[in-house]
Length: 294
Ligand SMILES: *[C@@H]1O[C@H](CO)[C@@H](O)[C@H](O)[C@H]1NC(C)=O
Ligand SMILES: *[C@@H]1O[C@H](CO)[C@@H](O)[C@H](O)[C@H]1NC(C)=O
Ligand SMILES: [Zn+2]
Image (cartoon, rainbow, N blue to C red; front, side):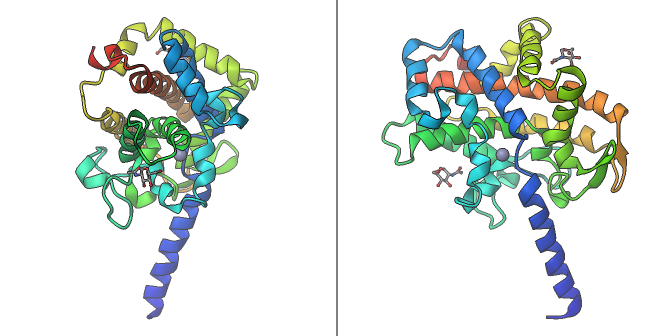
């Protein structure tokens, strides 16, 4: 193989490797918060049987808390290599999500993206004759509903959803994807929430019941009878990702200006993820159509 070609192959391999360690999730905190908010929402309207059904499916190590399982999917990427592309769905840079165009893995297999996965595991949990392990389906679903709300999980494919945009977050090395996965949340925890996730969750929950109480109903609305509305959530993320790229260049330093613009977006996406996860679990386990058909 020619030297130039070899160089290109190495470059692509390096880019793929760069995606692997950082790039597949809100960090642990983001996923935990999404799921805690879902539990909180869902305690107020989930039926007894549905609540029992979810608890019965949780693995023993979760000690009855869904949130404890919400980063499990990230730890399975080596055991289940096919699951790696299910954490995101990038686009060619047009700030849109198109299922037919974007929802596939790098071998071109259809449905192998975060939206396909949410539909897949929702359908599996609804169908008692599904061959898939329902505990795994629940843990995958809870994780991927979080992921689809992280804007850079629906970013530009050319830079692997911001993973190849290396930059500094205040004084530390990072990349744009990681800024949205973990840095904004970590900085907020440190600066505003006493390094306590529960304080941050409470603040977001308070907003859901006050500031956002009108919008909140629309977040849940989903007219699709056959699927989830995850394609809509991916479209929102793709649009938010567009703003996230604005003014960000290789080797730039992001500080207060960027942080204060990004934080309200991150907090709202966590809130929406939680509310929608609760609504999806509700329709799966309680046959409660109210939330989906409103
Ligand atoms: C659906 O779930 C099964 C079981 O985990 C998995 O093998 C398959 O790849 C999934 N497909 C999608 C589109 O998520
Ligand atoms: C609460 O809502 C306001 C207005 O939308 C927003 O600026 C703020 O960041 C939110 N706080 C939290 C903790 O979600
Ligand atoms: Zn993920």
